[in-house]
Image (tube, rainbow, N blue to C red; front, side, top):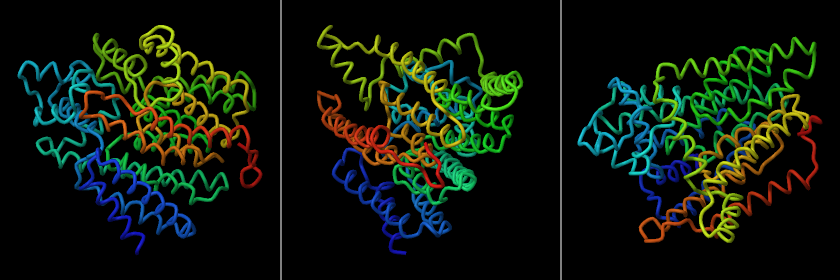
Length: 447
């Protein structure tokens, strides 16, 4: 009861009192919340019901809160309301309406001010199942900001229930302790970033874990459909597609297995395209591809190796080389993914999960933009492996919020010393676990 009371007070402050530029309070309370998470799991790991009550009780604290650490949800609500008005959100920027004094959705001016000029000036990049969630959030509450936020939050909490359900089942099949799933479900990072800040990585992760569970049960046709749903929330799972090669090709007749693999990929691609079909327009592909490209060639936030490459570029050329680096790094990521696909053993399930973890980690290490909520996918994958560096990252990622320290000053750049501290911690644990420490998993399973 003391743990529950302390946790409720902590998350209550996060939800209703904290200002994201109050860095001391943010860091102190986040650290206490992590310590509380560790204590709860340590003392009650044999009582999953109690852990579940705590996890979802803490989420319930946020129900009536307007997110105060992220403004992305304003764009989510705009997109959902656009669809309800019969407009294709992929064809218009928010600014194209507001600049002409046109207000196509309820509370248009409020949503525009909330999302900010940068978000309003670009086309949406959220896939169709994500858009469906935005629509559901506005069906009955399109004139109420809080009402739409509540519905959106309930969807994310339901997704976490699904992740808990299928994650536990998968751990049971792998003969691993089921309390490990609570390093994701009870993690303050997940509670604050997904439930609190309304980031839909939670829904994408639910479909991803469900798909992996179906794949483990050899129900690969259904796994492919659910995997496509995951892609249709966030495009991130696309990076995992090559890694399933060995899962299908390891045993049996080569031609038969190749046929299964082709059908698996065909179902994923076909289902994903089918979900995008209602939004298709001659302008759609151009708008969508341009918006996705921005993440590689324009945006910079909380990067690691990219910042080093950028500094080298400055020293030789005298200006930011993001346009070039942003084109080269995806190629490098693809080559590394293919190398892991064909030159590393990725079966049975634990090695597959480990390969997915390593590929996505390499992508985040090299990309130009790593928003805090991106790390959620690493965290859930780590639950099924022996690696803990994503857990460390989920703690130190809070340092990225110190980027806002210069928000109201002439110099709005990130504090690179703070970013360096974050990544020193992450890389130290990563190098220790991957290259130095040699340890087998329980029941003799290796990574």
